[in-house]
Length: 125
Image (tube, rainbow, N blue to C red; front, side, top):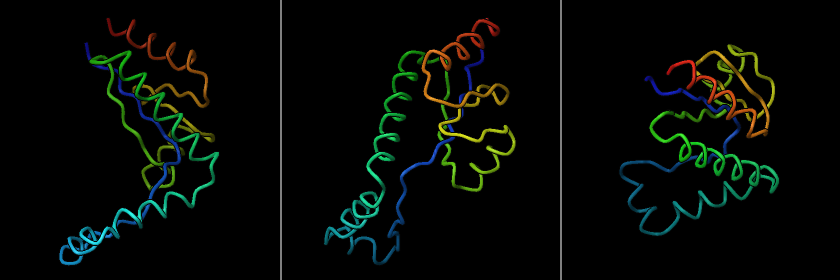
């Protein structure tokens, strides 16, 4: 059986990396790299950070529940790929889930998403 392919489209917390080959080790040694990354992440509103944390916990649980029967790809909604996926699948809210590039679900209802995944597993069996 082919594993279920689940794409998760949601805004992610991101920061600009200091990845200069020559400067990177110096920044890392001085502890500036982690301090800068933490400062960027702390600029986000608390409710957004909590939502991203809740989503990531949810993804961990789904991957544990379905283990070898699922492949998960997380897509930042504000990247070119994320914008294209939103347009392609006509999703206008977050988090958005696309099951096997066909069926979509937008929202936080765990039962609804698991029903979509279970339905796909039954069809593939």
